[in-house]
Image (cartoon, rainbow, N blue to C red):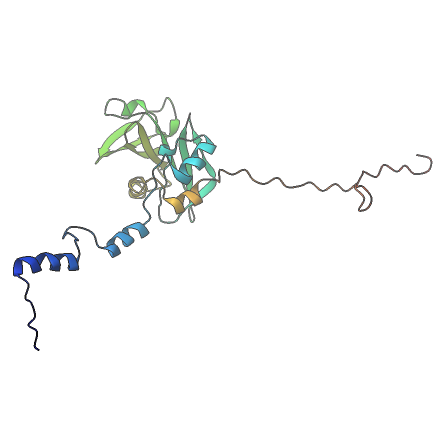
Length: 221
C-alpha cells in the first residue's frame, strides 16, 4: 500500500524553520566575535581584582592607577609609588637619551582659571603658561612641560623636561595613558603578598647535637 506524505501547511512550517536555524538576531555578535573581544583583554574595573589589591597594599587608590607608553621609553620599576595621600606616580626612562617621562595621577581639578596657578612639576613660585589642546591642557614652566588631562575628580599628568622630550612625544604619551589591564598590572605594581622571609644561617651552630651555640672556651680563656 502506498502511503501519501502529509504536507504541512506553510504557516506551520515557517516557525519550525526559524527554530531550527536558531534565534540569533542580526545585530547580535557571533560567538567568534565575543571570543575576540574577550581576548583583547580590557582593563579591569579599578575597584576589583588584582589591581585593587596591589594598589591598596601600596596605599594608592585603585582608580588613580594609570599606565602609559612611549617609543624608546622603559618603566623604572623603583619609581612606582604613592603621590600625595592616595595618588599614583611612575617614571619611564628613555633608552638612548636617559630622558625622564613622568606620569602622575592625583585628586583635584584643572580649569582655565586654575591652570596658571598650578606649577608644572610641583615647582612652586614658577610662572606657568597654559594652552588648550583638545581635551587636555599643555602647560610649560620651570624648564618643564606637561600635558594635563582632567578626569572626574582627578587629573592625569604626563611631564618631562622641555629639552629632554619633544612636545609630540609628550602629547602621544599623555593620550596613551590608561588604566592597566591584568598583564600591565603585573608589570606595573608590586605584588600585594609580602615577600617570604629568608632564614638566617648562623655560623656558630654545630652540625650535631641539639644545635645549641658552641660556647666552648679554650684553655686559659
